[in-house]
Image (cartoon, rainbow, N blue to C red; front, side, top):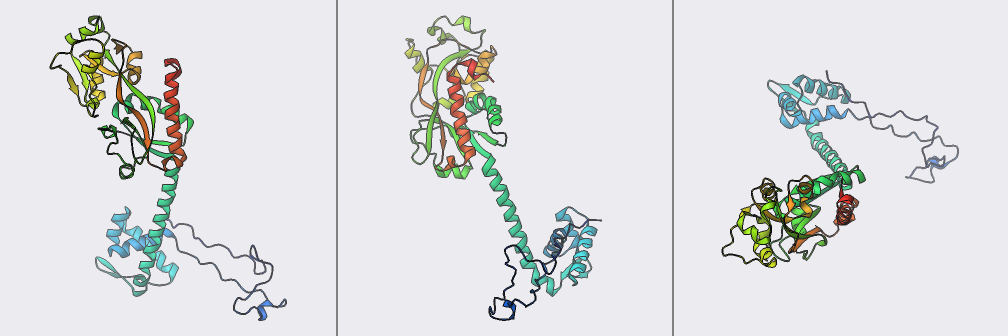
Amino acid sequence: MSRSAPSSHLPEPPPDTATAGDSGNFTDSADSTGPACRADAPPRQREAPRRLPPLIALSYFEAAARTGSFVEAARLLHVSPAAISHQVKALEAHLGIALFVRQPHRVVLTRSAEAALPRLQEGFAALAEAVEQLRAHDEDQAVVTVCAEPLFATKWLVPRLHRFYARCPEAEVRLQASLSSVDSAPGGPVTAASFRRAGIDLSVRLGYGQYADLEAAPLLDLDLVPLCAPALAPRLATPADLLAVPLLCDSTLLRPAERFGWAEWLRAAGVAVPTPLREQRFGNGLLALEAAATGQGVLLGSAALTQAEQAADKLVVAFPQPLRAPVAYHVVCPPGALERPIVAAFRDWLREELARDAHGPAAAAP
């Protein structure tokens, strides 16, 4: 048997007790000169508080009224039809009126119940809205939704997230890894409206940092160096030796307008570049990184984003000369996003982590 929720009935105070804020006299608003203002007039009896029926009974009644069936209401609420019947009977006893006319296989509202049902449904809708507001307020305080390029998200951001949670234990970071966070041209298509549509608070974009209606700040320059598995390194005495091994390419770096890749790095190193230059291209940096770590070739990639692989002796820098890319990582957010403390805290933490890295591997260690 379902147990009814506690009643909201409150005990009345003694008749001679004034409510908070009363001066001791009870004033009749209809006539301030009448008997109620006289010192010898008896205190006015206050109206007894309304005794509402249990909310569970009202909700079961609403479901039965909406569906016209105790069985269907039970299915919607994941209870038994007997539970619906019990709560409806308890509600009828509480109110002293019949709510349904019971018929075979269905129930029909009485006129009194039919008249009251719309207001009751409005009340439940208002309760649901209030609960959503409470939930939204809680999320506004603690949740930050972040989008980042997959390589940065996986190899740089995720390994450090525990330090942000140590700083903000109440936070919830909802992290998305997407190639949509890579610019194809200066002043790319990303806008404040696109942030709102995607539900993104903050993005780490690989791009030019030129956004008309967004707030952007540089995070990390993209310096590219040849990276390979340790077993492949002895075959690379000079940069020209790179032409004799497979050259791996992250296609993410082909999205921006300017070309920067193996041809540009080789020319800067003084190597004559053959035409065509053969490259093995991968759809994103994570795939290209795995190929390099398993000895399938040499990747032109970021030493800063492959620190874990280097520390684990999965990758080494074959040649230290970097190629500075025309794009860099930027932290980007819509106007007003930083007014939320949790978003501002995450942005500040990102910048502090990059500064920590700049002081060397020892400072950046977990």
